[in-house]
Image 1 (cartoon, rainbow, N blue to C red):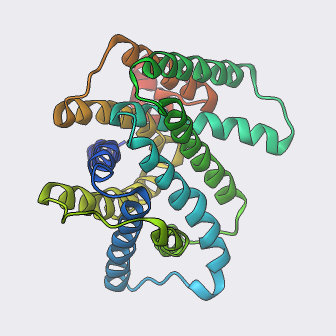
Image 2: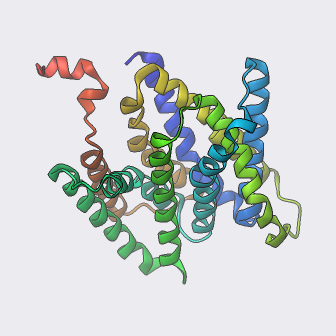
Length: 300
């Protein structure tokens, strides 16, 4: 992996880790439906501008059903669930629960193919459950009423990401940029009806909230997708999976610095167990990502 790819990977992890911080700031003033509609609308407009510059289209007429499915499971539903959960639980915990998506993916894949998980993946799945149970069990003691429901919503968002991944593997091949662009417009259409039941804020949001919402849409959705697909093209999907393990690091860091969130021992222990489970469930290996390490260890 080149230095440029490593820097892109770290930058992407920092951006996606910050998304939970921005969601927490946004839902302090805006209702989830309004916040997420603005997020996907900004991302869609940003990608439209980039697409116009690069002369790339997403062929909505031929692929609109595909974009609706992808937009629902990969954007609209998980974004809304995370926004709902963010009204109650911390950005740190949100970023850790988000890391369970690959574990859900392994379980869904086994159920879809009607095959048993490999022993290593089974252990990973069990570790993921233990890590989440530790986090949820301790966190709910200090959370206000509804904390358990918020944790379930965040896990539902991770589950939705896993469904989107499974769908994308079986769907017809569509160019990555078109997937990102088309799915964002589809997410706008899917979320729009919710605005009828989403009251406007009583006062005009402050500059801090506006900046967080703009960053959530343009940076954490638009720019992040471009970085992610560039990484997949440069280093492959397996190596790009490293972002899953780095997002909680930045999610916890940004929550502590900017929101003064409390980070106790159980946060680190629970996160370590969840990430270990994710690595086992996905067959992730650090030496597969960084071949130079494998050479130093004298492997293969």
